[in-house]
Image 1 (tube, rainbow, N blue to C red):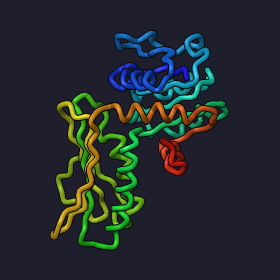
Image 2: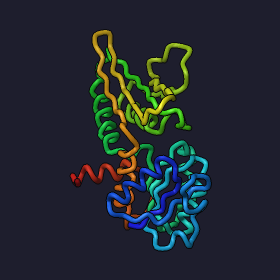
Image 3: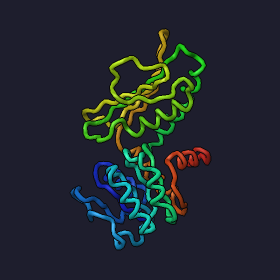
Image 4: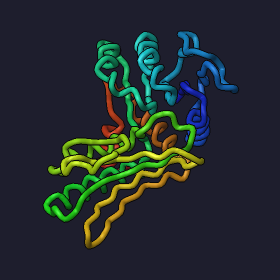
Amino acid sequence: MRVSIIGYGGMGQEVERVLRARGHEVAGRIDPQQPGADAPALTQELARGVDAAIEFSHADAVLENARTYARLGLSAVVGTTGWYGKLEELKTVLKGAKIGFLYGSNFSIGAHLFFALVAAAAELCSPFPEYDILGWEVHHKRKKDSPSGTALSLAKIITSQHPRKKKVVTERLDRSPAPDELHFASVRGGEVPGIHTVLLDSIFDTIELTHSARSRGGLAVGAVRAAEWLQGKKGVFEVSDFIQDILGRKQA
């Protein structure tokens, strides 16, 4: 594949390393501010002969970038988070565009295995009122969104599998949580790539499930594999569509 990298920060640079390692060509690095980028914006000329874009940019750039992809006929994998409140608007922007658009809060294969484990744990503990369920996440001091998109995905999974948890609370609590509230807290600082923990807790014991990212590499590998998977597909997809297809086919 020939791939344009949209957003050439730490994640974009990691994506470049993975693309080269998997035998793909970097067609261009697009970033309005980052040193080392080839251009500030994606143009028709820069998109010529490109098979896909992989974007890790800013939440406020996603819609405008989607308009560009639709106009240029360029499929895209988007790992940017913090914009999901505008998802319906994005679908309107892409309506009629003959491209594939795949988005998600976390492209790590390991994180999706973690999601499956959390879903099973939430369902298994639901018949036992002795166990409460809660979670938290920790990320480096430069992360701009809070809670993380992965934390929101975990909260959605838990509330869908656990009948006693119906509301998600992510802000600071100066009170006791209600029985139907799932509290998922966030901490920012240091250089932590990303830690997400879900706790099943009772007065008798504690069950702890944790996913700790060692680097951005897992996210980059997942994003590049998603771009490979997206080739020839049309429509809007979530990262879970790609992951479930891989798990179903048991591909390497």
